[in-house]
Length: 366
Ligand code: ADP
Image (tube, rainbow, N blue to C red):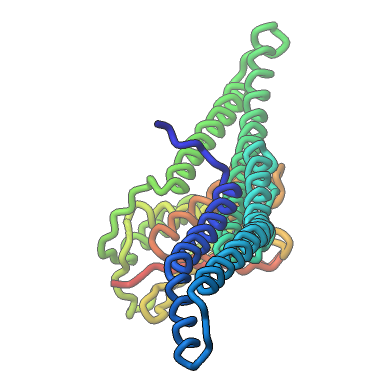
């Protein structure tokens, strides 16, 4: 036999009525059983005190009392059930109304209105549920927003080199452009840009999904930094900035993944060189309790206060045209930040337009 699926409001209403009926029923049964005995006892007590009660009037009195009791019990039952019905309906509505509201908001949210939020509710448990829903809704809205931004940024980033390559290839095909070294170089540059973009994106998506493996081990940063300074110094022009390393003798070993730390440093030093025309780029290490702070200080073009909060967002470039001219994709710092976080560290940036920037990140010591 299948149990009918009653709505919560009906269940609450019926449960209140059932409780009332059980209470009232037991009251009636018990009083019905004990009433004649109690009345008889009372009459006997009266007789003992000297009142004369005839046997005929005794049964008449007993019957009369019983009739009066039956009538008042029937009235009490009727008015009790009506009053309980009204109160129960009111209570059920108080619980059902916020639940119905929650149901409507959830439907709206599911149909794409991600801005929908639950109001504060009087019942603590439901209020907690509404808080949890709002928390989940905010996080889902964020994910959806980032997904849309990523797709729009991605299509924008891919469109530019693809349009350039297609333009050159069409020109070559219809003879309006003649093949020359310069043209092939441009084609190679654009395809390299596409290659770098897809590589960076893959790294970023792995880092964001937590799939980038970090293999922490004790690392001496000095040889790594020395080799990077040597490698980058070779690329610097004579009239360009100089690259310096300030490595105090008391720097202990750090806990980290050698390849990932190298990747972080290459990105930050590469950026410093890219955005510094003259002066000095310094790599400075400092010990702070259980952390080693590594700062890359440049005397380059700097970043304005308005741009600074966005610098670690993916595809963010201060001057899109200028930076893409430098071969930048605007993903490097987003990857760097994620890689540092995977090492339980953090990265901070200070910068002044026209004076230079300092990117500092910390790694745990052993
Ligand atoms: P990109 O590959 O474009 O350099 P990044 O994520 O590494 O991407 O950097 C984002 C933006 O931050 C850059 O486009 C640039 O505008 C700015 N930026 C990064 N490093 C520096 C720096 N050392 N000096 C000035 N601007 C910088």
